[in-house]
Image (tube, rainbow, N blue to C red; front, side, top):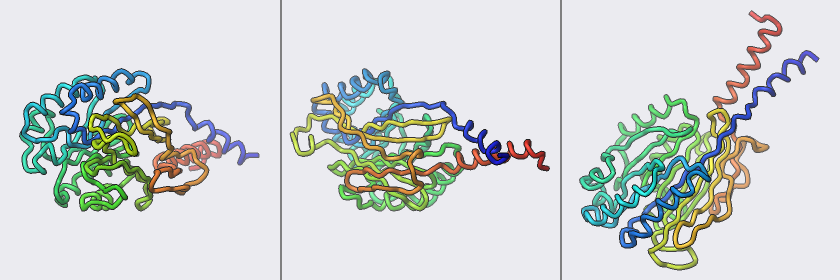
Length: 313
């Protein structure tokens, strides 16, 4: 009976403080500089649904324009991105920087520099890595890794331009990201390759969602028109500041406005602590891993309760 009394308060530790918000990932929008109305609408439409879906961020993984030094194209992008008040996080693609050789116009129109950077929003660390032909220098990875390890957030989003191809084969940078920066559950967002590919898998002890989003060649299996806008729409559920569930679906912005079916990618409330039902093509893995920080916190609270109950010294 004493054991039951000791465990019962632990159930009260589960909080009902749930928060739901959304994140939109788009990439390789460079063809829309030829369709400025669609470029504008991409951001004005997302702005029009931001309250309904509580959209916290738009993340663009490069190639904002086709020609890195074409001022007219940059003006078109600049006008479009100011059609929304949603925070926009972005990195440079090869088209934006003359294959990584010049950041003059990219910096002028975005305010971002050449260097990789790290910030945070909502419950995520955010790492932005610009396009590179090969990979980052070891010291750059070391700084990013140390910062991630010292961060209190339990989830990371890494945005870069070229991470993997259409069948999931990693680039050199992608391989180094996996080796150096996966220090907690992570979402890796990318573009560059003309394809759409989503999977989730374990890297070491951490679940990783890998997302290649690129609709510059039109609708898969449908129209090949370049006048298309679409992306990947993430819904995030948190409990007491910890990411509890992530699901995704394709969001079609133009010429139609709709969502495809939703897929659960990460769920700590699942029945198992292992990745189950993983399909690397469709990305329908159910990752059920309890974040270490949450687990430790719960057992610490139980121990404190027992110490008070039995007056342990």
